[in-house]
Length: 74
Image (tube, rainbow, N blue to C red; front, side, top):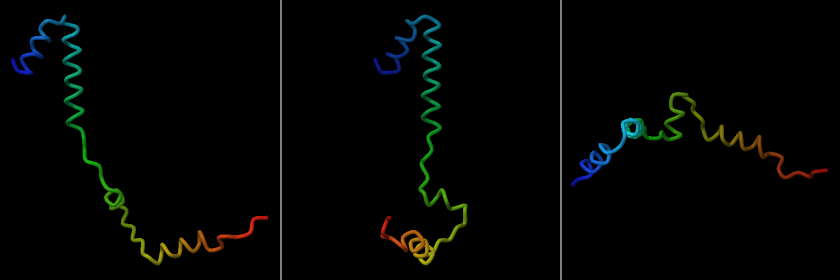
């Protein structure tokens, strides 16, 4: 007896309301496997923004953030 036959055998022994629950669960599992999409990389998520950040922009932002660090806290 293969797996499919074993499942059908068990299913046929269940009451009708439980058979409906099994069908609902099988449909849920099928949808769960069909709707999985591969994750996009961060680069891919931002690709449509058409933002071009240069090394100079990054250096300037770092200078603005850390320019007066460390300083004396009074």
